Image (cartoon, rainbow, N blue to C red):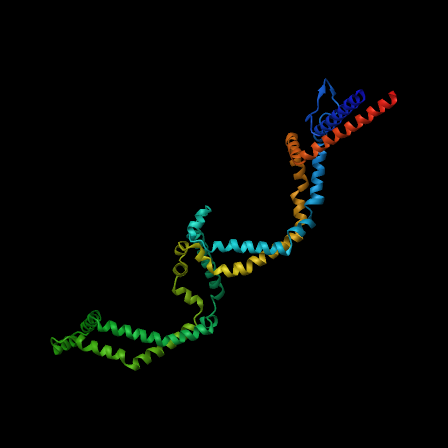
Amino acid sequence: MEIALLLLVMMTVGAVIGGFTNSLAIKMLFRPYKAVYIGKWRVPFTPGLIPKRREELARQLGLMVVNHLLTAESLKAKFLNTEKEKALTAWLQKECRKVFEIDDSVEAVLNRFDLESPVPYLEHTMDNWIEDQYDQLKEKYMFLTLRETLPEQWQQRLDQKVTSVSTYILEKGEDYFSSEEGKEKVQTMIDDFLKTRGTLGSMVQMVMGNTSLADKVQPEIIKFLKHPGTHDILEQVLHKEWEKVKDWQWERAFSIVTDRDLIIRLKGILKERMNLNEWMNKPFGSVIQPLENRLIEDLIPKASLKAKDILIERIEDILSKMRLQEIVREQVDSFEVSRLEELVLGISKREFKMITYLGALLGGLIGIVQGVFVLLTGL
């Protein structure tokens, strides 16, 4: 009975010492967090191992991340491959299609991102561009003739327009002289003419009596305007004059219209054609709709491939400029030891308990061996 009691006591003492020792060793990895002093003498084993070596641990973790975890080769193999490129392209295409479905106006979309309307800027840019182009063209063609500078197709088209212009002039003349205003103008011209002829004019008026000369002259003028020969004469005159105009230097052409009037007219035509304010009120998706196929089917795949190639080529420089080692070191070094202890124990709590139990088991076995040894030596 005494032998069994002795072995039990020795085993219990050994188990308690072994378990406590291992548990204390685990705690001493982190605690105490700071060095303990008695006067100027620092108590041994303070602070704990990890707080004491935290700077070295942070440095080694930084090296491990840079040299073994986030290496250029591992990133290339994991992320910069054809499969990931296709996945990125598909995701970008899917997200991009949503942009073309936006029903809000262009102005509303810009306001959403606190962006001002580009209309004033675009109009100002167009105005400057028109003025610059006008000055350049004027300087370039100033002493050249219209015949030398106008495209051949333009000249042929303008030549053909002479006939249309002749017809237009005669039609408008006929309309005017057929109207009451035209008749009154004819009468006024006849009266003025007769007044300048003195006695002859008075005699003509006496012969005509109450009959108006305008009533007789007006139909003759209209008949003259309708006559095919009149059209031919006018067309020939316009052709001759147009041929003369072709030999004008642009300097003479520019002198007919002032620069400012022409520039203002050009600006007005361009703004009228573009109508930027109306464009700003259109749905954003419909405005950019013409770009959909090109953007989704062409530009995005090319951009993804190009981005992958650039990253593969420059990833080492990017990683070096990111200074990952310093970032990891600073982050670990800034961790509170208590927080670090919670992380480690949270991950390895089960294993640490097993180490404590293993210490108690080994301590108990050693206690039994010691008890047997004491009994044998005692005998």
